[in-house]
Image (cartoon, rainbow, N blue to C red; front, side, top):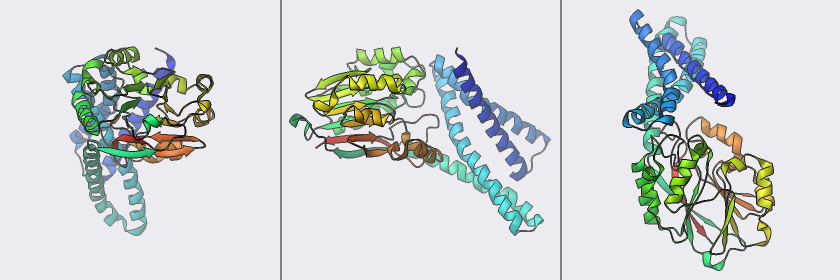
Length: 373
């Protein structure tokens, strides 16, 4: 294994350990008193939980069975709860600082366990809300007008389904829910702009079977996202090709006059390679074009190449607090929705699945029904 993945794992594990240590210190200061045995049990439990997510991820990367799936799901749930507990603990220390200035010491100390209990309950409530909210799938309807659009495409619809993250959390049942929704919407074409798979070890043909039974008239088109390359990308892609999906890896295809271009995730991370590929297509002088690219970045390159519309995912709309703010800092207005960059229109979906915590707070789970006008 290369040194960079090992360094990344070490950094993530260190962050997780420090977060759990911070929770331990907060509980000792603000929680209801524990005896010696209780304190020892709390230390052991939090130390074990700090290792759980990466340990279960390593197992899920190599194995697929009910026990591994259950462990990975439990670790993902804990990761989501940890997020709210951690930031709740920060708020707790800030509230305590204010109370120290406002109240005499005896009263402030007496309030500490009650404050801790309130924020613990709030973290649990937010986690439950996020868990339920993530399972509510919405249809977002968007109309887009493209110059040089072939007459045959006016009024047609495309369903954009990004970031399903099929794996140990979102399995075949989840794929069935999305497939039923797609069947009701009856699109002319289905676009899958990356992260269809979570990167864990699964049987691609089995887990995607409900979705790939769809037969839109103009076909199904897929490009890779970063999570396809976490796992066995070739196995994923072979499973899709065997079921009639057109996998576009730096390719351009003519779909009844509409130019559909698929950018492989690895190409999108290298500006020079991306520019060479797109400029060689001469998009500015042809019919309207749709670029499938997982991440809404490299926009100047795509716009200069003459593309009409770019379909993306990746951001999850931030998925949950406080990462919504972080994502906005990284991608600006292109984090979500239909935006314009010069002559290029960019549609970024918040995606239909989740990664890590199976929760959404501040962002919806969605598919996008795109109508060409």
